[in-house]
Length: 196
Image 1 (cartoon, one colour):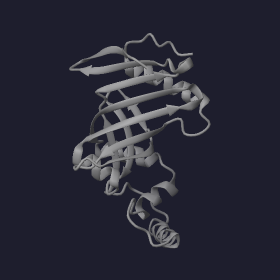
Image 2: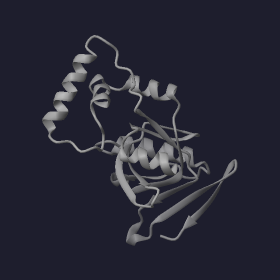
Image 3: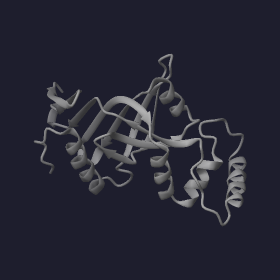
Image 4: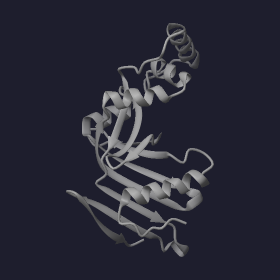
């Protein structure tokens, strides 16, 4: 088990995420991403965490998707990791900004070629008349890039959430859960506990 005595929420998240990689069957880096529209309509979906360090939590998406529209309009989001096998959750809230083009390019280059082509072929979140239309479009993109490197599309990049609040939730018997919360101050973290 993890040594939870650290007062650094980034170090604690790294330790919990490492345990989740060893115990979760699929996608231990899956997280619920919650956003709101400018008129406060909430929306949530699952995305994959692709980077984490002292600067924050990073994921990638089509910049013309609904989630990107929300993020670019409000610059705020919340994340939730639920690791059922460990009976743990981590909730994270904070402002969001786009990653640099260099960071987006570097990550895009690590994706499989099929995923790279899919980023060009998909008008993510827009209506689609049939699956055949998308498959035909994918084949067109495949032919277009035949024998060439696939560069990152201008409409595809990443976002970074700069955490201002991180809660670590550990299941307890009889619903007597352990909730540890960190709140960002200018250059440090305040730490406390919450009732279950």
